Image (tube, rainbow, N blue to C red; front, side, top):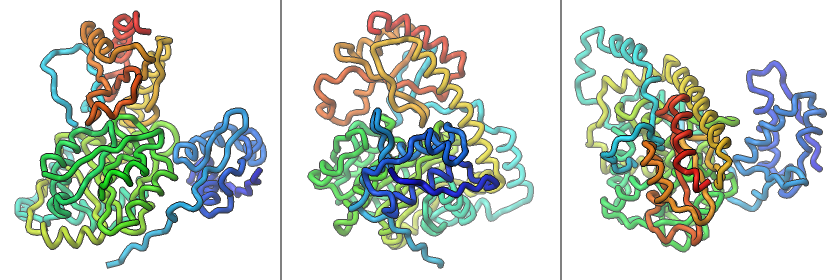
Length: 471
C-alpha cells in the first residue's frame, strides 16, 4: 500500500479535498504511485490526515471520475494504468441538436436541451446594456475584428484557463454566432477533404452539419470510457469529434487514460486533429468540473469549442473556438477577410458580464438551481422502484433511464405522451441504428433544466402512472 505524505494547508483557499486530489493525481502522473498500487482506505487516510472521511471520499470520487484510480469491490482503491501512454507534457504558450420540434402540446416536457430562462439576470443585462450605450460611441457600430473584439476574447481565454484548464492566448480565440457557425467556419479553414469520426450515439446536429458541408463522416462505437480508439484507428478518420467532459447524450466522462490514447492517436500522423465540444461543462454536481482535454494537449492537436447557450441563454448566439497555432495560421490565410457574426455591442456587454464577476455569480446560482432539480428528479425516480437503472447523473442537465430487456422505447414514450409528459428515447441520437447493441433495453432521456421542482414531482407522478405496467 502506498503511504501518502500529504501536507495539508488548513489556511489555504484551496479546499482540503482538492489538495488531497491534486497531490494523488500528481503522484500518479509523475509515476511515484505505480499502476495497480493500492491507496489507503478512506477511513485510514482520514484518520492519518485528521480530516473528515467525507473529505477524503470527495477527493477519491474526483480521481475516479477522471480515471486516475479504480475502485475494486471489497478490496479498495488502486492507481489506474496510465504509464506507457502519451505523456502529459506541459504546453509552452508563446508570448507574443437541436431536435425536430413536435407540434403536440405537453403539460410537462423533459427536454434534454432545456435552459432555465427565468433565472436569466435581466436586471444586470439591462444595466450593462445602458452602460455600454450611455455615451455616443460610433465605433461600436462599425465592423470590428473578424475574430471578435479583443476584450471579449481576452475575458474568454482567462475564464477558460481558470475554469477549464484551457491553455490559450486571446489571439487563438474566434468568437462567432453559435457553435454551428463556428464549425462551418472551421471546415472552411481546414477544408472538407477530411474524414470526420463522431461518437455513436452523438449530437446529431454536428453530424448533419459536417455531412451537408460535403465532409466524409463516419461514426465510431463507444464503451464505458467514450470513443473507442481502436475502432477510430480502423475508421480511416483523421479528425475525431468528441465531448470528453460530458458526452451527449450518454453523459460519459472520458477518463484520463482514454484521453491520452486520443491525443496519442492524433499525434501519430500529420493533419490529424481532435475537435473537443465542451458544451455544458459548467454543470457538475459532485466534485469539481472535469478539466478540458485541450489542457493536456502540447502538440497543437485539439480544436476546442464552447458556447454561452447553456450557461447564459441560447438567443444571445455567442460561441467561441480555440485554434491551435497551425490551424490559426490557416484561418488568417483563408478567412481573416470574413467579418464577425456577433454584434460589437453584444460582445462588449458579454465582456463586462464576465469581467465584472456577474457570469461567475450567475453560474453559481444556476448550478445550485439545477442541482436542486437534479436531486428532486433522482429522488422521485428512486421512489418508483422500477425495472430500470439511472446513469449519466451528477453532471449536465439530463440523465438516462436504462430499462431491462423486453421494455419497448416506443411504448414508454407513447404511454408518457398519453399522460401529457414528453420524454425522449435514445434511439433518436443514433446515426446508424446498427450502432445499438443487440438485445439492449429501452433508454429514456430526462432533462430537468426547464422545469421547477414542483413540476418535476407532478411529472414523475404521471410517469409512474403511465409506466406502471413496465416497472
